[in-house]
Image (cartoon, rainbow, N blue to C red; front, side, top):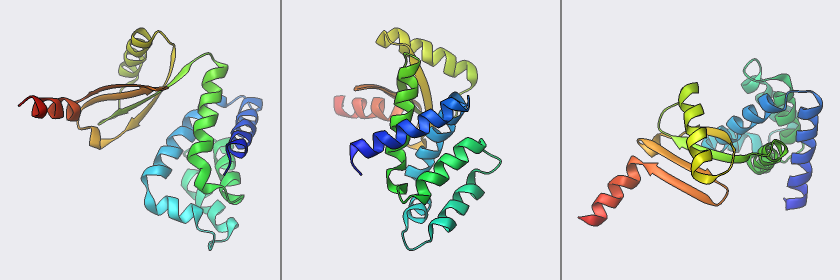
Length: 175
């Protein structure tokens, strides 16, 4: 799908969530759903399969998110999948997250860790990233077991890699 269409969907989803007063919560839920969507081949194939009727794909979304996400999030994902734009869901959501962060004068900081972080760890990490980059950040944590340990943070075009895997690779190259 063209960037203009992706931007259009992101803008529309943003406006709906903002109008309902649930932007922060919906943005976070959508971000987590997009990462799950990207990491699960079965989910991605099911929600993008044109052979499955749109109503069935929407029912799958509602079963997955019902009770676990706000009604707004469920309806927004269902609408995108039902309109046949499931393949573009991560791009649409990433644009929405960027738009929401920009509206709050924040930069999106996608952080990958091997384990979930506590609220205190997230607060301290956000402060450290803000200090390192000079920008206030909207922290988005993704649990990624391939990191092994440590943190990999991406803020715009800047990547801060403090992962154990990278340190091991650096040691290997020195030896």
